[in-house]
Length: 315
Image (cartoon, rainbow, N blue to C red; front, side, top):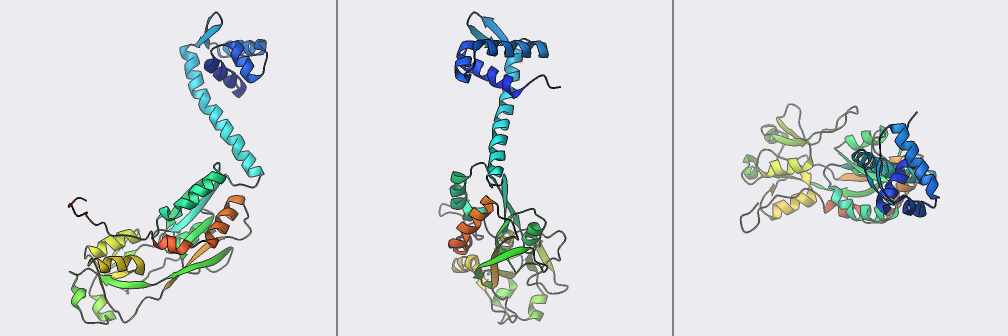
């Protein structure tokens, strides 16, 4: 049986802050004899002296300081647990996991997170970034609760609700120094087959992986994120399709050249999605907020960007 109770730690904390048993009793609305008995009983059970008694004033011993230092951690944890249990009872989840395609930055949701914490600060948020089929797999395997800005219509079999939030065109681009930069257009399969493609790896663990813009047997440089693909294409290490908003900025800066190809990539539709039948208060808040706002435009403002040095030559 445990010899230490949270109530005893609470009393010791009050004594330390107030400087005496009597003042602690006033704060806790208890009679002084109850305070004295609890401390004496704890010291007897633990076999240590918690307080040095100097008349009405008391100070913690070395053992008492260690007990209170760790005990305050327990008090905070107990308080947080109480609040979380109350949240659950009222319908608020203890944690909400949001899945995003790795091409977007979580900064796009910064204002939403700030508003959410003002309403439900005891629900923890967790952001998970996956690529291509990865977000859908994370949703179906219950590793995330809400998908924000994911490509494709999702896997067959159902079990989720999806809402279209926007459509993104893609452009084929290469660095100015790449061999294909001066090649005649439109570029066909034969011309592309001779060069390296930069592709983003599908992060799905069990679902069939998607491959976009890669021909069978073609040399490929595989990277984990769209930002890495964007950076390496600017560096001239390969070619590929890029989201039009970020590619257009790089093209305007002279970092990339857009090329016409015979087999263009169709625009990609992006979705929000969540599992069927789940109606927690936090999930409902996020769904309602994001579906009512210009979510996709905000996501597109946080696509990969070129890492350009400033005019002073500093990185």
